[in-house]
Length: 142
Image 1: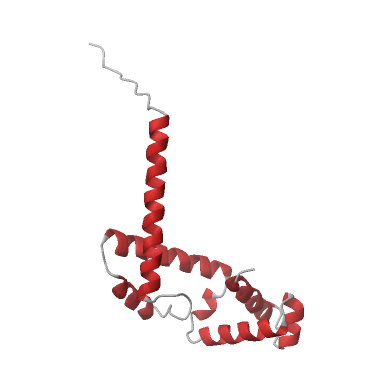
Image 2: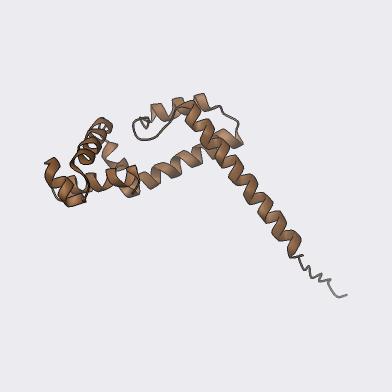
């Protein structure tokens, strides 16, 4: 189980079941007490803004990923805006506690996205070469 999934599990147990003690959370989530304690500290550290609770939910985290990918795609790749400016943008949205928004992390993600786009493009070109398009020409009758 990934760290984000464990955080969501502990957060949901805290919110939905109302469990507050580390021992009870560990029992409910089947995680060690140490792990639950560390995760609880992480969650508490991230909960500095009113909207922070939303990012702890699976739906909120998925929306956050879409926001990051769309921002990098539109502004970073298509418009050529640098990683430093994108990092500043994410800091203004107060997302720096939720995701890695350093210029280096954003540059790495942009590189991965560019590589994925190129790979997809190459696969599509290969597919087109393997299956020639059949074009039907219809001419009007006079």
